[in-house]
Image 1 (spheres, helix red, strand yellow):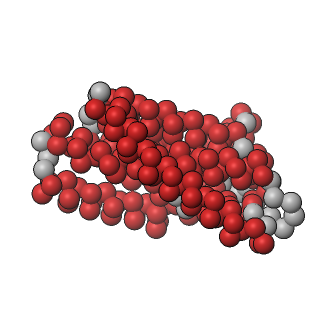
Image 2 (cartoon, helix red, strand yellow; image 1 turned 60 degrees about the vertical axis):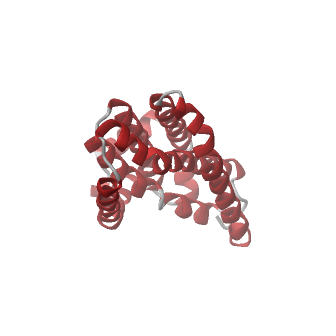
Length: 207
């Protein structure tokens, strides 16, 4: 990050973050509606449910994220988080509340810390503030537009909105995975020694 900024890689990270913002804002906007339509849960039930979900996210963020990064790497954990979020939307399509909560609780804390880490490492110090501001702007636009646009899809059927969000997150995961090798070189060496698992080696060969 001390030399020339890898503009393509930074642009992809910001774009992926925007796609994640789309998915997260759709979840926040329609989760309560989905719970009411599928399970008849009112505010008195959805409120504690969201509190439990927030606790699960906190626990995963606090105790799991570092372990995953030490064993797989920042980019790989970000990809896992995106795929887990996509799985949460697929579970909503299937009507499985338990799996929705579990996938969401794993996906959010696996992805969200990775973006500032990547941007801070990739951007030179004199451009870091500008890059973070651009990223925040893209996220804001995604969070503003996605509930309104996907609300139209939801009106024609919740499955369409959730399937679209899942596809967007899978696309984001694919873009992030395609840049994993370049990001490893730019950001930090991958975990080595006894902490490097067989899945890590398999992942690398395939990419």
